[in-house]
Image (tube, rainbow, N blue to C red; front, side, top):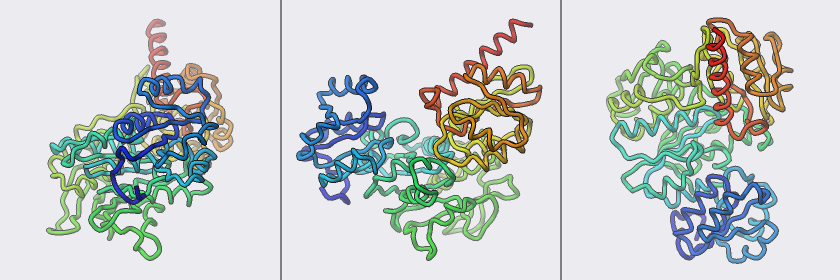
Amino acid sequence: MTPSSRGHFDRNEHVLVIGLGRSGRASVDVLRTRVGAVYATDEAPPAKLADALAELAAANVAFVPPDALGDVLPSITTAVLSPGIPMNGALVRRVQAANIPVLSEVEVAYRICRAPIVAVTGTKGKTTTTALTGALFRAAGRTVHVGGNIGNALIRETAAAAPEDWVVAEVSSFQLEAIRSFKPRVSLILNVTPDHLDRYFSMEEYAEAKFRIFANQGPGDTFVGNLDDPIVASAPGEDGNRIKARALWFSGEPRRQSTLYLRNGETIVYAPPTGDPRPVDVLRTGDIPLLGRHNVENVMGAVLIALAAGLPLDAIREGVRGFKPLGHRLEPVGEIDGVLYVDDSKATNPGSVIAAMRSFERPIVLIAGGKAKGTDFAEMGKVVSSRAKAVVLIGEDAGEIAAVVKRAAVERAGSMDEAVAKARALAAPGDVVLLSPGCASFDMFRSAEHRGETFADAVRALESRMAGAR
């Protein structure tokens, strides 16, 4: 099979799946019924792989320990890489040295897909935007499959998609690293801000990974970009010709290149690039059921995708107004004695924390910290210092955040229960206690979701204690 061909994952293929996380296990499950043989490998200790190994055994799929790969590599035709496994790791290099093409799960999902794909990426906001885009297609009566980095493996969704359906995919920079022919009908980059610099050598390298989302697009495709983000706005390159697809841009105010923009900060306006040139009011920002200016940008990205796909404006308006906020993204979890408690546990980078803090016009007690990802907290420190009355820090890299907070009071906590208790003592009626960590969760929790659930449990326990004391 040539790397540029689409499909052809047939009985002639012998596939090695590298990594047994969620997407790796989904790749095994989908491909085992399509190809001649599937093998799986993972460098994690066997104790951590117990559930995955049980699934493989039940499916009659062989697990190959990394030190035994030499026995199967001569028969492998293609390897499928899970997004958590770095392309420059020793395991991948060993497979590549055997002249075996290594494809991301997203690439394989694309090759077996019969439906057009919308692909969404960005440092922050991509999950909300992906879910909202799916809601807009459903509001227009289209059958849509939503997957990728949003939580369910893309390959499962594309395997089930009919030619007349649509697939909406959230794709991370990790997933884009190993694409070859991945070519979405519509692509979107929301923003590119510092993140994952423990994996990338520089912001330039990180941005280049994001820019791969449009690398294979052509004149029949559409690229959607945020004109207000300087890195995204630079994507066309110095000669302006790097993006071969039709490019549509959105911005916070009318600009020469803008197809979608805000008028007076209050109304989203569409300026059709073809046909009747008269601007059309889409909806008012007050109709958006999501907190924060950053969510206005997310809505604008989703709306411009929907317009590029030919969805009717009435359905787009209905889809936005009826959209339900996702969990752990500026999600209110309780109000106690006039203090609002908000779970933004999915904010795992400084840019997301900055956006969250700018969503409130009331005093903030911030709970932050966790496992840093090589990012610089300096800009986040400035915003925290200017907008937070106090900060409660948790996790192994709490000291890095403490070092950049200059004016707000800073306290440390060893658990989420302690953090909520300290935040409650620091807050007054009318304040918000905001969990927006700016870090990964794995030093203390199983996932960002687990961290948010632990926060909500601590708030409910506090509410129960307060009620009992009255």
